[in-house]
Image (cartoon, rainbow, N blue to C red; front, side):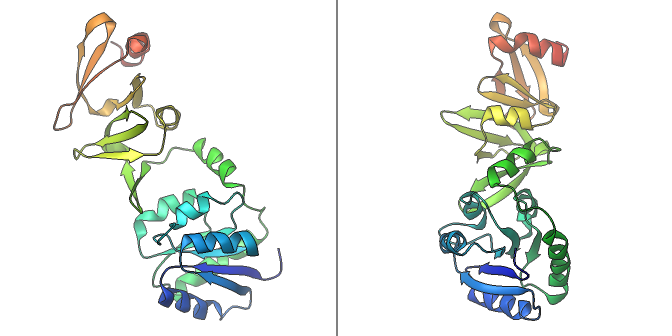
Length: 250
């Protein structure tokens, strides 16, 4: 890496880009080599210019910040800049150095500069696929992320009643009666989620903390009545009977 940070600013708001450039000019260590107004342009610039550092907005047209990073085999260092604080956990899951709320203030940027100094001597970031693999074996977060259009929501695990596969899609059913499409497979969730989540069927995982009652069904199956408003009933698969008896003391 060169003495200075080869830097690209990616943000769909021109005023935000101009403000950040003015702030960064106070520091000799940044060479701002280009800027982009959406994720698609940013992706092209990163692939061609190979920057050391990117200041990256999240909500942008064409490709948002997360979608852009997912297309990079070897992402540069990233500092997220956004007007929305609900993306913080997802941002750090992506291995970002820092998370700045807009409008960026000089005092807050100073803290980011200090973090950049710490990262300068650190090893290069892992390819995104390896980073995500390592994240999956770390302590489980208390939330799952779901996408709604160009937004990413954080769903608390405690609010998930059950998870169900429908055709090729997997949905989280939450205590407020809503269901949210997730990009995880049931198998991935089975490995990722904490102990209170149990797979009871090839197409269903339940949160045992939301079981209202358990009834015996046919052929050794169990019917789980959940404590959501609809009192959803989910029947276990025949092959899961013995494991459920052991884990739930049935």
